Image (cartoon, rainbow, N blue to C red; front, side, top):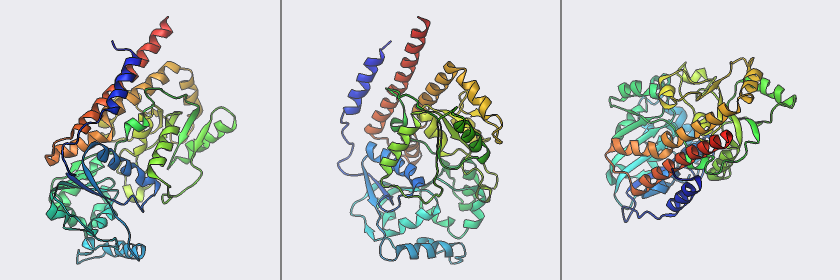
Length: 402
């Protein structure tokens, strides 16, 4: 069996290998709003785009707003819900025009939601210059589909449509008369993984974004008693801006992989006006598990969660009213070997299942595009990382027996 040191050296060598690009020029065209849209919730999809640009030949089109963009875009979005002409979805809301000067094998529109579709209208002739086109909408709830009837037809421009929520696939397919595909969220597992040198977990509990108020109060009380070191958001608002999406993701990953426990809940929990009871997996599950934290909270009661996180103790449950927070934390503290096993298992499963490269490969498979050599190399690095984690765990167990 290889030693941990040899695995580290092998991974380092592979990371430094320059895999030659398959093409002399970009074969993928992908627009992005990263130069002006820097809300914290957008950073996960920018990370997703970064993984593709690092592993393939991509021409990333950084869109720029023109004069009056904010007013025009807001006006257009409001009118789209009542646009019986069904034409507003094809109007440029004020971006500076972009003209493509070459042909591409694939056009990819990565959309947080329907608003990002408007960005595509700034690119002249993308349908003529791209052999195959894909739209990936990360967030779309089934209950919203009837309210979006005046713009959904725009999805028929694409050869393939992917949706982040599994239970939305069938309703959307029926609505646009075309088979859609499920493509769930993921994470940059290389960024979030605590391996090959796991840092000390100096934070007991970490909570970001939406939270259950009852559980939060119970954790605050535990922190006030000096029982735990609890880090949580003190600012509220989905529109908070970041200086740099890469710095934000690095900072977030560094805190998460130094946290013993990480709070999770189903996507958009508490937002019944949007979800109407639909349950799915949010980003936090991927991020916390990739960092090797123990996930605490409520697992989503849906097929997608059971399919994506099928291993034991993927989530250690806490009652929604927070009544058992103290007991759960005390129980875990009394079982350090169980906590260590959960941490390692989460980190290993994520690098083998839920890195962004696996999502890109699935998209390519459906679109009939061959994966690049750099994609294959990234998969090798992920497998090496999983082997490091397993080897380190075996070494720890052997030392305990001695």
